[in-house]
Length: 280
Image (cartoon, rainbow, N blue to C red; front, side, top):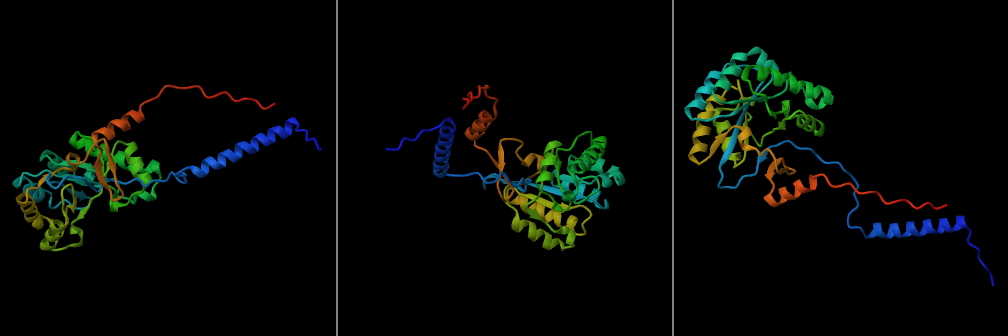
C-alpha cells in the first residue's frame, strides 16, 4: 500500500484549488455578471405628464440677430405667456438691451454657451469655461444666474452633460422642433408644432427666424384653446427625485422609490474588514 505524504506547500496548493472551484461554481449560479459600467448620460428632452396635466414649455435659442425681440415680447404679453430664451454670450455682448427687455418682461434667460461651439469637441475644462463665461454675462444684466443649459447644435455627450451638472446646470434639449430656422412658412411651422406637441413637451424656436413671429399667435391660441398652459422650462422640469429614460423623458420617481434611494445614499456605519488568516 502506497502512503502519500502531503507537505505543507502541497496542502496550501490543494486548499487554493478547492477555493477556486467553489468560486467558479458560485459565479456560474449568479443571475447577472456585470460587464460594463457605461451608461449614456442624457439631457432632458421632455417631461412625463399625465394627459390631464396639459402643460408645455416654449423656448427660443438666441445666437444671431435681435430684430424681432420687441415683436416676440409683444406677442407673449398679448397671450400672457412666459418662455425661456437660451442666449449665447456673444449675443449678450452685442444686444445687452434685448437681454434686459426679455428679462424685464418676465422671460427667463438661460445659457446657450459663450461662443456657440460644438461642445463635444472641447475639453471638460473648456466646456465649463464656456458655460461659466456666459453665466457671468447674463447674471450681470439680469441679476439671476442661469440654471439651465442648451448645447449649441444640440451637440452633447456624457462629458458635456456631466460638466454642466458640475457647474449647476440642467442640460435641456427639446422634443418638438419647429424647424423655423429653415424658413418654413408660418403655416408649416404651426402645423409641425401642433402635430407633435403633447403634455410635458419642450418646444424649440429661434429668435430672428423669418416666419416665427407670424406663426406664434396661431400656435399659442390653438394650445390655449386646447387647454394647455405654457410655462418657462424651469417651471416644467423636476429639480430632484427623477430619472431620465432612454428617450430623454424626465420621469418623476414615486414617493416610496425616492425615499428608498435617499436611504441608500445615506452614509452607513463603518465595519471592520475580516482579518486575514496567514497561510504560513
